[in-house]
Image (tube, rainbow over all chains, first blue to last red; front, side):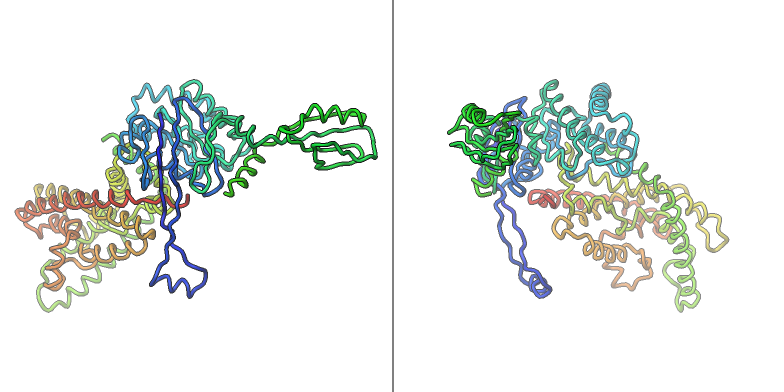
Length: 325
Length: 267
């Protein structure tokens, strides 16, 4: 469905040092640096997938999304989505996709949300009955009934984001690109947005590509992640695999009856210790957690034990460090 | 076509949200019109030779200019489009299944139409009922009036085509101020908005007649007052059409070439 091959894109960035003198100098002679935003990115996405596209700030995530949605023209490489090359057949192609840029707005600021929807209906030439049914569904699932008649400028960020997502889906696209859809949202709104993305993926079979910095989004939605850094593709696979490969660390937290002896168990490292509480870190590839617990219980009178996998956030930080991005 | 009608509708809706701005605009233009008329009146009183355009025609010219300000002023701009380009929101515009030139053209046209629709009536009506000689007079006959409507609307289409270049230039300069000043000052001057073209020195008139700007304002207003004969007006309509087609073609070409190199600002 989506086939991206060897996409490269570079930007020319004007450069000058701080200060008035430098600014004056830049009037005559400007220095530029070429920033390679994407280097030979390739991947394939099948229909009905939800793919999390992650990477640190400036990795090239948004650039990829913009190329895939026909906004930017890459310097090299090919891209075939639904049989179109996005930047060549832009007008015919974009009918089939929906795009949300979390930090931008596509709604008309001064008029009620519903007027923006009506305009989109005409722009996408959606027949009335089809529009009505999609509209009703969106209103219901995104809970927009109360806010649809208010001008956009009077909405909160969370309300606006729900409207933005609805606006991107009003023409029933087959593919949805979400560029940081949960940026700046509170926990409740985030969950609502995630729930909705899941629903349209399962019920309508919409293929979703989303970029985010919130790993909870990825965990809740995507079974496949693509990691890029400094413009190169670093990892492409499912989340469990990523965990296995990079997240073999587990933490064991134990509470016990007061015991002044410090704890030392082979294959573990102590993160924190008090006479009643200890947090150990183990590498499950070398030590089994069951062994550690057996040893703990032989030494101490255990009250409570919890084992936690490393949070995905930590894995990502570790990954960024490992790839030096 | 329906898209363009919807854009006009949403523009009218937005325009009507700012009613006090519309009324303030009407008041300003009325005031400005009066001042201009009085200045010209003073000049005419002490003119050594008979001016090439009569005071009556000139007064009509000025009232029409004030009433249809939104149709003829290059500085009358859509800041939203500038913001789209400089802030990077153009990303959303490019996700729409429409040709960008047509879409923006419709937006700009809708903005001018909606603004003029809201503001021209009060000025026209008031100007009609002013005491002589300050009032707006009716055109000499019906066919002149029809020609005026045709040339005014063609002039509007032409002006929007010219103003498109302003927006296209912002893709490169990223700041609308420079283009606005250059286009605004030159365009308005050569459209006869500061001094009506017949009052310019001959050599300047020659330049003005070559440039496209005068076809947007000077031409329709003089058709209305009868200063331009009907025969000349019909020929003028064809010249307007020629300019319009040429500029549309050039604008489309220019926009397509900047879009190939577009950078979405702000990540």
